[in-house]
Image 1 (spheres, rainbow, N blue to C red):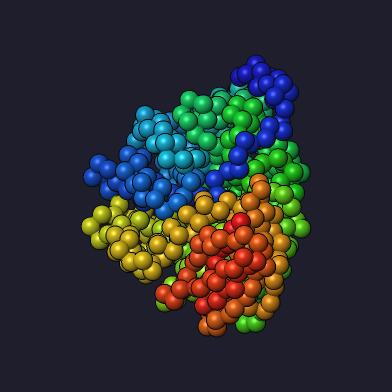
Image 2 (image 1 turned 90 degrees about the horizontal axis):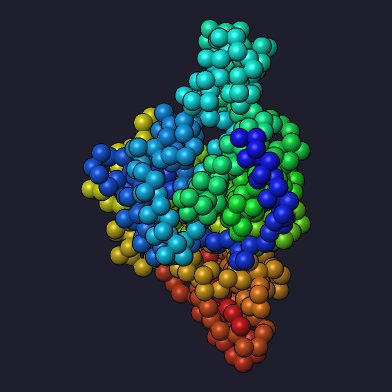
Length: 503
């Protein structure tokens, strides 16, 4: 394994850690908890063939990236405690099923990334089992003992090894997830081989990296150093693969993590009930200026980086709840648009496109996808409340004004006008409740006019030659109006309306 690690390190030197992507990553990502998405074999548990059967739904909604929460064998329902990094959990299917899914994604122009938890393994992983057996036998020089962070000193975040006077580090206490020794050459060799397997043998396009701030607890510098190695290794194995990290922290620290060279880190300051987007929507005055201020903070901290904004995910309360939008669907729609208007690769948690709800215990945030009343998986174990605040997928597909149709229009607009996601931003008009943003990317110019008021109609003017109406987003049923002349456009924006113009 050390020989493999040395070989990969040589490859990195040859091909350089600065390999550029030929194209930006997908701009509309969809996160799926496979267990709760679609069952194909009648056992009540979602699986990869079930997900494949719903791939046209994902594609038709305009998502061009798909992130799968952990799919590797695990004793838990959430599967963040892995027992075999190069297999599929039998509940979810087989490696052949995954390869079929990857092929189908690529046929539809969808990139596929998998969750890779390398901060820890399961206590049932053979590496850990063999390490503990060796400690009980007094064989402290056993190869696998070096795979984990063992100590003969107890303390916080240390758990005892039964039958010995040894302890192992466990940052996620109580979950049976011992921390891997990421300084071990052998462990790094294993991780390199695991990434090679998924990227090149199985057809994955990258990874979502779990809990990157916990690799070396409270040590940003060491975490960045390890991520730099991991990123360089992945890019040497498959140039252009996409890596996005979970750094649940503030904007300035996220900026430090980008120094690792990783493509993206989730923009946690924009998410949840106290994030930029929810605060903008709750603003009692000058919401447009408040949004512009937040966007300026992000641009100053992360200039030129590929952002990964989101409203919520599997660890947070559902977006509809954090936005207080159960009875105000137009607020949920507008927030979805503002998330994308942060720029970059926006992520949507499955079910948020139809307004699913859930908070509190983690299983409540991972309820069965609401296709219709007769086609749902079993709820995850530990669920204490099952509630669906809005109609099912089948009903929303029939309604041109539904949350689902709004998400579809937004995603398709970003595909048609890529400068919305990737363009350099400039505010050409900024008032208390309305703004116009100009974005320039790859020779394309777009102008995005936004009315942040939930009640008032505003008019604004865009001065530019050769404009065309690219699309519009109407949170209410009232339609926005664009009057385009040779030299520009006069826009009438109803409440929460967004109009995109392009040269």
